[in-house]
Amino acid sequence: MDTPTLVGAAMGILIGLVILAIFTVIFRWLWNTTMPDVFGMKALTFWQALKILILAGILFGGHRAVIDAPQEITQEPAAAAAVPAK
Image 1: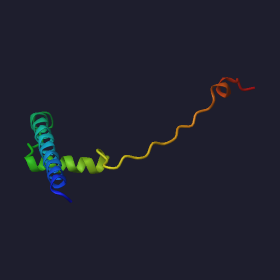
Image 2: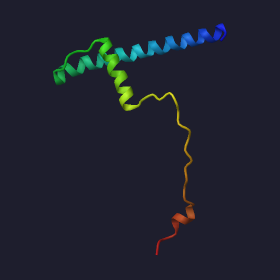
Image 3: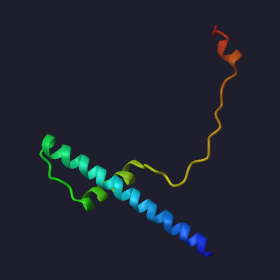
């Protein structure tokens, strides 16, 4: 690997970590302003919020790294669908 590739990869990882931290802070803020008042739950720390986001990603399968190949869509011809059944 050459130097520009390594710098690009490092920047990509750094940007990904910053975005993850921003999502975590937003999730923590939403949780701490809502859940303790409504349900009487404890406030979360940054690390607890990060763990919940990771767990939710695992359980609900969000943000897949591999995109499935498009499936072929089979449709009936319009004339066949318009013929009334006897």
